[in-house]
Amino acid sequence: MRPVLYVNPPRVLTVIQSISGGWQAECTSFSYEFFFSLSSCSVLLTLAPPFSSEPSQKFGPPENFSSALLGPVYPARKRPVCLYSKLWSGAQEELGSLLTQELPVEPLRPERDRVVFFQRLATLYVRYVQIFRQLEEAYDQIVQPQKRILIRQVLDNVIGRVLELKNEMVEKEYSEYHYMDDVIQDMKLTPEDLEIPIPRYFISERSKVLRDRSKILSSILEKLEVVEKPKTGAERTLSMEKAIRIIQVTERARQGRLRAKFMREIQRDQERQKKSLNRDLGEAAAEQAAICIQKVWKGFMQRKRTKQESEEEMIFLGMAPDHSLPQPCPASVVAEDTKNRRRIRQEEHEEDYQKSIISITNSLREVEGPDMKENMKDQIRQWFIECHDATGSFPDFPEEEDGGSSLIFADKTPEQLMEELAAKEEEETSKRPKGKEENIDRRKGPGEEEVRITRHHKTNKNKEKKNKKI
Image 1 (cartoon, rainbow, N blue to C red):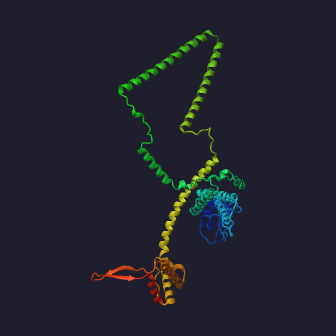
Image 2: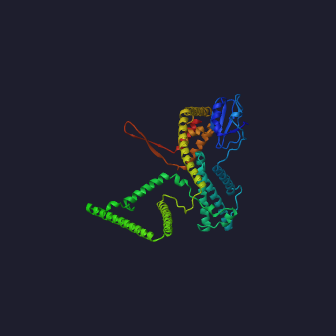
Image 3: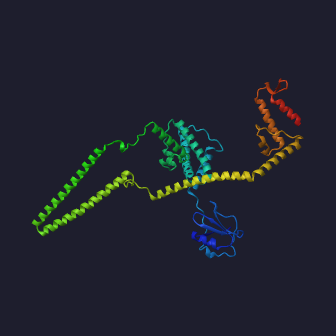
């Protein structure tokens, strides 16, 4: 067992730069594991494989190793298991239990009670729906392409089983709506747990097709003039003289309003001055203070109304959120962003996976291909030699209809192979009608005479081959 040392991430570069002996570093999602090897000669930083709990190799410290570089040593912790991997493993266990229940060793007796039979179907239906929800969530968030391929196959099969159970329930109840309150209560579920969500990969995997379809639909609607085009303001035309006259009228009206307002203010000031001369100084000061307070209050209220109207306008235009509506929780927003990032990583990993398959296939053809060809040729030669040693003659090469060279690589003795070929030939002859003759034009002689060769069924030819081998 090798010792595992946990260190803080900022110390990693210091350790790598300072240690000259043989080291190997593993990186986990929470901390860094360093463990040393006497056989290695350089520092190697690799990603630790998931779900590995105990190392298999033995490691020891190098001679020039100083434990002070690593800082405090903490006990090794178990690596955490991903939530979606837990969903996948839980769905596997549930599927295993359902398989043993639906396919027991001893077949169950037919149920005569209609209610009991429906309860059995409803229980299976609810359990399969729960498995479907788990698998759909795991398939949507797991980023490993190999796991996703396997989960997708299981998910499609579970969807098919859910449809089968639903069809059986409809046939037995003669209704598409079922009441399963007792089943939900026994399994401690809620009605929301029975809702079947639309798998998200239905849309994500067909996004390009959906975009193309929307473009085609919009182009068809535009050609048929079903979509109303926005009206532009340049449809109405005015002459130059009429436009100038309209501008002059509006400008004169504006100037008149300003002049009238200015004259009213002058008249108000004159009246105020006359009143102030006739009143005492105390009354004038109180009136001036009241006017100042009114001015400040009216300005404050007007600014408040203006700000409120501006906010309402921004909400109406969709440029600001409506505070009256319930705001999303920050944790849910972060979780949704994390899910979107995982979906982006899924696409990147899937692309890398497909590229790696192509590159590995090409490298195998280039590196291992010639050796594999030579080994297969040697195996075919060895098979012919063994057949010759056993029968005294070289056998006929298997025809393409019988499987060709794949029969040679089946690890069977020549006698077994010949028996299988003979059994296939006898089966073919038994299926064909007897007594029919086929006239085949083989060739024409130098005198333009047609040479017709009449042959019976293939059984005669097979008998001649067997006689020659004997």
